[in-house]
Image (cartoon, rainbow, N blue to C red):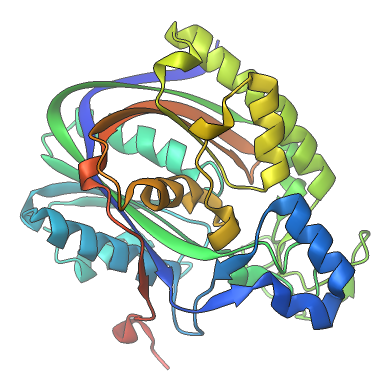
Length: 359
């Protein structure tokens, strides 16, 4: 028994990504952590630079910019978008759902079903399946999936492992119903590892903790509002469970890896990607990389990497295998087709929703 899902009649018809204008180089941390730690980090992760939001920018802002740009480029009538799904662990507010704010900002119909999904690194894969399934059950002509994250805002500046890792970004993916495409998805959850990537404070289990810094077991300094990650546990999970899941997916799909033009893996770090590729015997030239320029952008990494790889190329229709994995612990594997002619280059923005600030 497994969560292996099939959807048909819904296709991706466009994709865009927005990142903040502010670029941070890993080299800037040399004075804080020392050259040896910085060079070791770069070698292990492959990350050189990240884009990070300004004080006022949110995940909703990045998702809005990517969506507004995409809809203008495609000339889609916004009244025909019947489903809006926002995937993030960096919502603009604890309530209401950021999707409701984005429905208003984007000028979508009041008849548009809008909701949030609280998922991180597996968010695109889950969101892709959920919006397809939802559109199969209604008469919406178009659906909009927005995956956006500002992980840098909940990362301790004193954490040697994470301070240089996370970038911020938002992607928009437009879907159309009434097509002949079949998409397949495998979803899994390893909830026993929930503490392996966690921000303890801010939710209702610990709603008003003291915002003081303490030293954790790995020697790094955090407050309860900062993300803590057990790097070794996440590494072991990624290189062991993700290949198993991909094998199960291929077996259930009755497909082999040669049928796919490209493989998109969550851009956690370069070592994890190489280990998964080695175990699966994936050709590295089929696995596009974006983390060197954008860092780990959590659930956004897959659509961001797609835009980075094809935003300026027109290769026609391609067949893709994608896997997202991390926070939860959660993972997903999916396959789909898309036309690279409607994948747009990554845009940069520093705009934010001034109406959304109350003080």
